[in-house]
Each structure stands twice: as structure tokens, then as C-alpha cells.
Image (cartoon, rainbow over all chains, first blue to last red; front, side, top):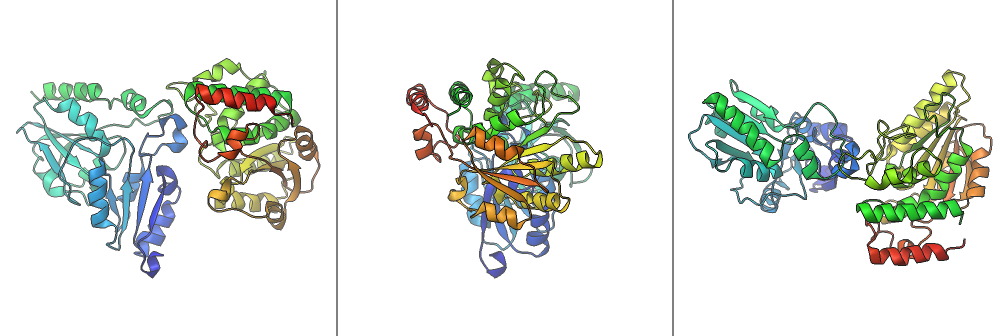
Length: 232
Length: 260
């Protein structure tokens, strides 16, 4: 359809439309430069109870490596609305990672632009993306840290990252990809806080999994405070 | 309806109600297929890793709740163990994990994978000159996955007569891409095909026991939600729905009244 001028929308649960068909995305979309919109649902652990077959956390990391790909992780319905309307018909392969657990924080939305939610002049900067912002914001809203949020993972906003290159940067994210994108800016003091090197096969709910891997508000707050104490 | 299969359906309903999880109509479609397969297979519930056992793989992994209830019925574990279905840190997830549950040979959940593993296991038994057999239950919706047909081509090319594919022909694909005339399709791929009533245990067992020269496909004509008219008539609304207390009264009554 794209080869004939259409703007197709493709949709199903995250792993089935990213990991399973990676070569089709790589060759048929990116290599051929046939644009189109891949919209996944389920994010990392929205289907926690379904087990590892329905979890996905490599999609962002893999897709940012494909030449010509745009990779977007909207965290709220407002972000979905604005970014979809601005990008769907630009002729590029674009990935939208959707979730049914959006955050409720109102942030500025412009494709390719990160958002500074807190600039406290602190030595520590927290960076995150997508729906996890809800937990991260709750964890650090009264802490003396800087907070930067991304809804576009590729192209990553290198200018906004560079503003904080003299600080220690902690990336909190329930997927791979954001950390790797930020690390494209050279010489950062950067650490990743998120997924362990194992399948998160505990079933339950998204909240259960996030708590188990240290991404609930309390755990995030404790991790930040430990790092803050070390820096002070 | 086979009395054991009726009881298994009641377990499925109760566990789905209590847990809030489960694909009930899908599970109801395959109860007799699972029951007949475990009746025909060589296996030992008291020794699930018995070296001479046959292998069963639920390729349509979202029928896991039915599979758990069958395994419990055959004595692999107590049905009470399944009550934590889908709960945090439970062994019994909405798709099965072979590392956690006795009798589960392969973790499935993403469609179109189990059948490929089944072909590999059947080939391994052939190479070992082992008499063990492999049974894989594949959904008709699942068969929209190209990998199903790739696996069948390999199996037929290798003449894996120790592999039996049970095809759950419950017309669930009517929502999207329907595969018409599955018997002809499987024959076209070179398989030996037997068509049976997917809710008749005796017919299923007869088909499963029949000797063939190459990979065997048992096309089991089934009804999604079989056993409860409410589920049959509203199979899409019930795809992932769990029954409420009020639903349970209706569904159990319908099940009890089901004689065929």
C-alpha cells in the first residue's frame, strides 16, 4: 500500500508487530523507504498476566537502529494525538509504542523535542520516557534533581541532553532503547535503571512487575536518594 | 458430553470467575481434543519427565487454562493449585511456562511457534530411532500465521509419521482471514488428513490412533464456547471475558442441561 502512495496503519500487540516481523520492517519499510505507521499496544508489561510471550522491551532499542525509522513512545493520550497527526503522513516508517496505562502529566509535545520538567540546577538529572513518567514524577517531584522527559526516542533530542552533560544522568525506563539513544551524546556520566537480565515472568499486573524490578514510585525514589547522597 | 469434560468445563468457569482471567470460549472449544489426546498419549502424570513419554504441545497457547484443568484431571497436580491463575508470582499464568508446571513441554503464547517446535521434536525422535510421538494442537486462527504452514511443509517433506497435528476448526477466523476447506488445504500440503467431530472423545481417539504414512492432521470440527449457548452465541464478546456470579448461574445451568 505504501509503495502506491497510501499511509498504512498496522496494529497489534507489541512483540508480534516489532520483534516477530523485524526483517520486514528493516527491509520492506526502511530499506525500500516505504513509509507507514506501526502502532503497538501492550507496551512492556500491560499484559503482565500473559507472561513473557506478550511482554516486549526490545522494540525501541532494535527499531532505533534501523536507518530512516522514527521511534515514538507517547506517554499520554494528548501525546498520541499530537504526534500521530504530525507524523503519520510524512512518508517515513514510524513506530508508535502505545499503552493503556498513560501518565496524567500535561507536557509540551513537539516531535523530536525532549521536555525539561524540572531544572533545579542539581548535580543529578533524571531522564525517562513514556507512561513511566507517572511513577518517576511522583518519585522525585520534591527532590533536588533535574527531570527530562522524552516522547520521541528517535531522533533523540541531543541538544536537551547536552544541557545536562555536566550532571550525573540516571535513566529510568521499563524498556531498552532510551538509554541507548541518550548515550549517543558522547562523554556522559550515565546509568540505566530498569530491566534485569532475565524474563519478567511473574504474571500479575503492570504494577506488580514494576514494583518487582524497582520501577514503582517508592523504589525509584530510594534509588535516586541513594545516588544523591553519593554525589553530595 | 463426556462427564469428565463437563467437569473440566466447570473448573474452567470457576477459575476464570475467581481470577478475572481466561479465554473461556477458546478453552471450551478444545476440552475434548485435549482429553482425547491425553487418553491416547503415552505419559505418566507421576513422572512427567519419563524418558519414553509422548510429547504434547499446545501451540494455541491461550487455551492454557483448559490445558491446566486437563493436566489436573489426569493427576499432574491438584486443581486447587490452578486457582492462582494469572496472579502475581503464581506458577499458572495465562500462558503456560514449561519451567513452572509439571507436564508442560513447551512455553507458548505467541501463535505459530509451538508447531515448529513439535516438528523439531518429532525429527529428533526419528533421528534417535525412538518410537516416541509428538502431538500439537493448533488453532484455525493461529493458522493465519505463515510459520504454521512452513512447519507443515518441513514435516511432510521429512515424512514425520510420528507427528500428529490436531487442528481446532472452530471458525474463530470469521473475524478476519478465514481459511476455507482446511481438509483440502492440509491434503494439498501432502498431509494425511482425518476429519472428526471435535467434541466427540471416541471419534477423536479413533482419529488420533489411526496409522498414517506421513504427518497426520486431525481436523477437529468444533464450536467455540461449546457447552454453553451463551458463549457460543456471543463468542467474540466472551473472547477474554470472565464470568460474574450472575453469569455463572446461567453458564452452569446451560452446561448441566447439555446432554450431547
